[in-house]
Length: 77
Image 1 (tube, rainbow, N blue to C red):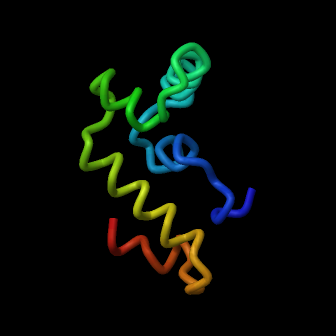
Image 2 (image 1 turned 45 degrees about the horizontal axis):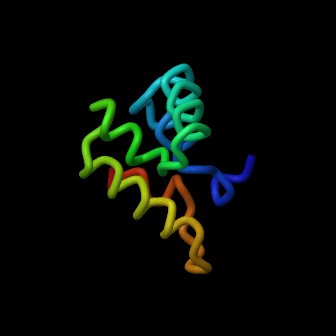
Image 3 (image 1 turned 60 degrees about the vertical axis):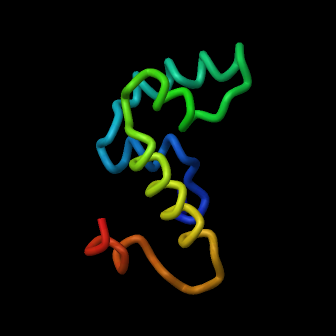
């Protein structure tokens, strides 16, 4: 999958901030209550609000037409 197409939870797993199993569990919760994955993971204390916001910002940058690539942003993480 192209890095620009990764979803929020996939970024968290790739960055080793949560496990794939933890993401699956959060997705199951999302099916029942409709909350955002980031909010669910914060409520479960698996990530902090700061981590949520940082990963959301990373997603925004990578989805912009600026030409940034994940490898060019590694030094920022």
